[in-house]
Image (tube, rainbow over the protein chains, first blue to last red):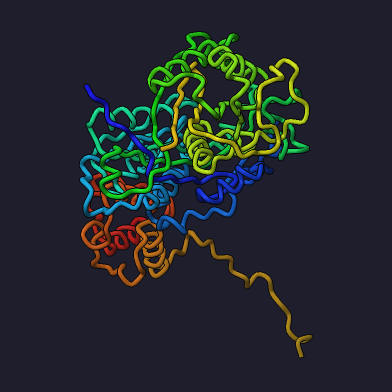
Length: 415
Length: 100
């Protein structure tokens, strides 16, 4: 079967360092931190009291209040980012065949805030279940893709992938497969998360997975630094419009990049810890390279999963060296989570957007906050520490790894 | 002249708000809940207006409205009676008769 080519024709971003794609790139390229004290709940008694929250975001500027109140924040973010991407793609909504437009979204958790609020309300009562009828449809993870399709009338395949922090990469790869096999022409994909909540911050700190650098939040997300002490949770969404190449060309669409490969693997090792040799990460990247039918030497930039956890960062870099050999030292590598924090199920989406923008601008966004490179990390890798740089980028690869041992990798190429 | 007035505190009557829910208050509260939950204009919320046919409510909205009425007026509305509350006026009448 002849596989069709798949290109990116629209982008959307709602992130802690910028509420639009252009603001996001401005933040990425200048090394802006999106971190600050938690404002979404009273975090005084929490071990971690900071996060990468959205700034100056008012949902009512985008979605009428009556509709917005029936959506968990993670769905609101999905709507805002996908609206930007759909507008960016410049579709003639009357002309496209909406039956052949899918929505495949990623979210690691779904409507956690909705779940918490309802259960707290229940807990304060006398045991009578006065559960709001919108509780379930707001909470379930697939409400995000469902709401995007309802808003736009897209009637193709519609679901949400859930694989923790690789969710959005899995969504992008599924969307890729439906288009390249000719099942649909267009797919809205990406991912979102709204995890600045009591259960999420409390739960991740209980695992000791989160940074506790409360005295200096802006430098807390510091991948590869010897003093990194965990990830910083972030909220927001990233959206991509994937489109069959001939379809995009026929309507004269702007093309950002081509999606050329997707790879997956499982660690089959531990529910939270990555494989100590980075074996799952290696398999995922190798699978993606094979799918893309490119040589390892062709990759110019890797946007790493790089969460700033002591245990996760070195394994991924080891896997990169194992996968790319000598070429690992010639490519540019960076973790943009140093700026955005970790958007969990939305991470792969905002990082795919970052990788595509890196190709578009021929510029590598930096890994900020790395003051003392961990001696356990290969010192010869170009980790783009603290300052971004211009370089030729024809091919960019983005990794996402999730609790549960899920790994997924996507590869984009300049068109 | 005020020196000549003595103030007898026994004359102060404390009204417990829940004991004197005036009819007008019930109607106003019902309307404001409907405006809030359904996102409609207050002028649309007439006694004859049907939640589903006139005010754009779906089945979930209707369930949520009944729950809000129960919460606001501290009543429990059995399902078989909730089914008969289809209009603004029916809600007001039911609550005037049953609100505690």
